[in-house]
Image 1: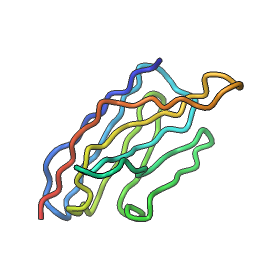
Image 2 (image 1 turned 45 degrees about the vertical axis):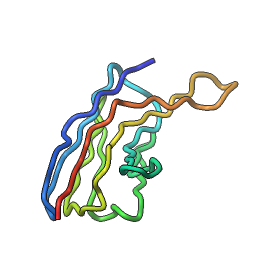
Image 3 (image 1 turned 90 degrees about the vertical axis):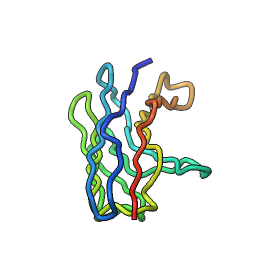
Image 4 (image 1 turned 45 degrees about the horizontal axis):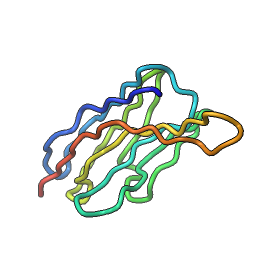
Length: 117
């Protein structure tokens, strides 16, 4: 299984920007994306990019976040941050291990993003 390592999280004031990066141990031919989990809440998809380059965003981040992929790296540029963006952010890859079964989720360890008001 490939390994995913996130970086770039931190503390920022409302209206500020952060750039998250995900480094994969090898190239992964699959849909990859960023998810987040606020404290005490369920994990949710933030943005994803498919193998064809199509990008999807959660309504709450459209116009503010931009996902990009290049070889082994997956980045998330976050602008105009709000306190409700506070969460642990995870890098994700949906690997199809065979045509006989469903894809398997591969996760990074997560990076904390805290937005103060």
